[in-house]
Image 1: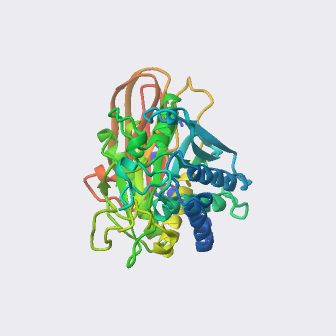
Image 2 (image 1 turned 60 degrees about the vertical axis):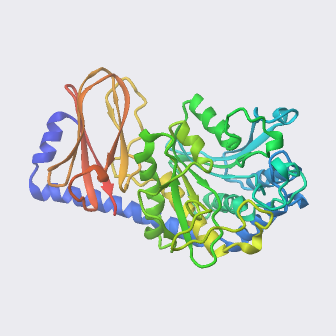
Length: 467
């Protein structure tokens, strides 16, 4: 859009301006409503019977009832997970991601462990991804029968029904529904469903004690590899222990304080899940933003690599209590079995993660959405994502040369809402966050306009805030 056209846009007769805005708003709302109905249909498809079947298969661990790292049981569980992914036609790739635990004693330091990764490639932005993960292994290191330093780790039962067969079952059920051709779900952004290996602390007898944390090995390998390859992970959620509560359907969101610069992004990402609970009437009781902090799951590995990441868990933490949760007495014990679970809770948490993954994966954008320019040498202002948004969204733009940049947000009356950039910037691709949490006045739902202006370029786009 030329500078002249943009000026005319803001000064056009009020009736024409109103009609244009009404068209844009109605178009965006229509798209949003259409996606919401698809997501609601997907939520309704979640099967408690399927979840139960998967949990009990992981609990059995090939008949060993032991999924501690380096046991035949955890290998059996990994194979089962991959076979279930392989049986689904809608994935673009299913693969083992092999890693080694260097802090284990010989010969275990040379024994391969695996993550299991299933990928639904995004159609518009395949290079940008969301990761939903759950760890495969289990432990019984709090059980009375746990030998000194874990000496009997190969023989003790560690069925891990809640921790974390529930999370694995959730991502398998999500996988089935996200790829079901009945829903014709084609995400804009890539979605990766991952079973992480070696999340729990290793038994002391096979850990060298080098000072390096003896847990989160699979996710650490995955996140480091992603960072080394400059992968653009927009958000990661670890689904870990989502099934114990005798009285309430309660779940908590936790983020890692490991990367303070990412705290606000992690909270904004977590709020997407929090808001989905209300938007789709899932019926969970949840902790409120700004959420709790903790490092006790695979989300920590991604925060360390500066990716926004959260943990979905039955309480923050499961050894604490609140008004809706009593500490899980079966945590890390041989008694962590299927019969202790609240399967209605497992189903609702699965629905919550499914709804949010679908919403984030396929964002509804305004009518003038465009894919990023194939000519990176020119000026470009890209459509914000996510869109619709609440409370935050990201705006990306490309500058072919350095210069003074002004990026502002306006409401429908042309009043300035926020100045996001007002400085000299270098040439290249840039990304800026706009969050309603940082605005001094309350913003209502509706269309807002963001405008990029430089000495040689000016362009505006619309974005939709939905509360």
